[in-house]
Image (cartoon, rainbow, N blue to C red; front, side, top):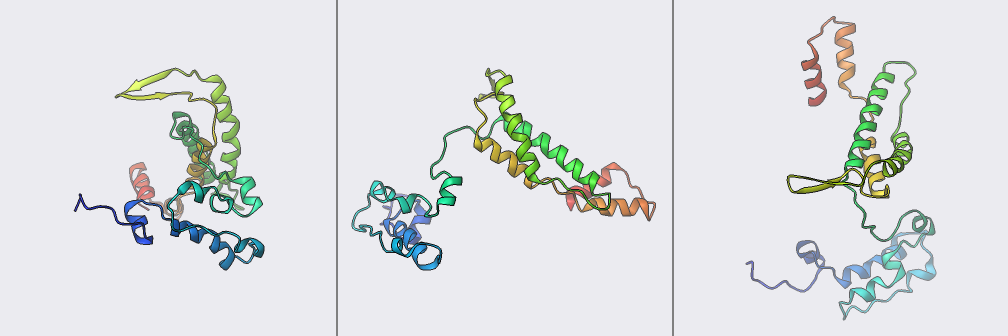
Length: 205
């Protein structure tokens, strides 16, 4: 029933009601100690949480709970969320431009032997100076479209925009398998059904 009280947090109710449980947090450090052979043994038993209290501040004040035990991971990944815009016009324009250019180049290079391929790392490297250049050149004026405010320049180019562009490139840079079918039909079977058939074949496969 909608008016039923939310039960006390359990491992099953955490996923159902979105409630964090101390019992779940208690398992985080112990996993490192039991199943990870690289985790230091002197730290595996050094954390004891008080399960009689549901104080999140006490739980997240422990370093091993809120951060990785490995210095390499801590040096590369933040253990906090940066409140910066991600779904921006800048990210979409730069990302789509690099996706179209990269997919075109990979499709073109796939016709030669040996094959030359551009990876998502190329787009990731190129997007960084383009994003910072966009932030310096474009005006910060805000526009309103259908009661939705947007801007060409939301401030400094941030890590979330860079990540979105890298993800867009990583899933779109590969050449479509349908190009082999189309090339075989044209080169060996002399069959050309037109651009509409080619587009539908690529999209459907």
